[in-house]
Amino acid sequence: MKNVNFVSRTFLAVGFVLAANLVNAQEASPGFKPAVDNAHYRTAIGVRAGGTSGLTIKHFTGNFNAIEGIIGFYPNALSLTALYEKHAGGSTPGLHWYYGGGGHVAIESGRFYSISDGRRWRRYYSNGEVALGVDGILGVEYKIPPIPFAISLDVKPFVEVNTDGGAYLGLDPGLGIKVTF
Image 1 (cartoon, rainbow, N blue to C red):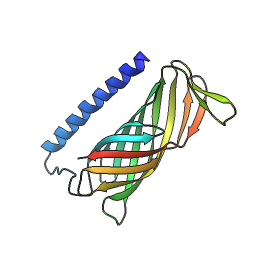
Image 2: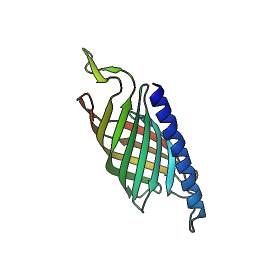
Image 3: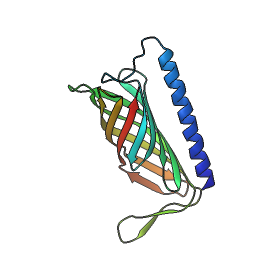
């Protein structure tokens, strides 16, 4: 458990340092406008609640392309997810849908059990396991024009294989709230 706490604190600190540097670089760049009074933004930092709950950062690399990272926290595990997303706008300013894919790695520090079908227990991870997965994402996001916030609702299906040989499928729906700039 100590290793996961150390790793999660380290990733959290690195994430905040990177975000602060990204904000400073954007403010220094010509043509940068904060995403307060419009329906667009360049970068957003926030939280995601759902199957993978944790911290998220999204950065647009072009007009309709973005990369998103999620640091997921669990009672006995930590996951890192990286996604590439394509965004498409609608007729409502600030409302757009997105799709994409990526992958994740999960590190577990203790035993975690879950009821799989109500009749028997199924083991997901045992001590010290690592899991690798492939993720997809499909969602809708609304950037609230008068304030620097975006709300998203998505589903992030995944396939995962762990070092114990187990393979798992999941739908992983999520609700995100982000501060935009």
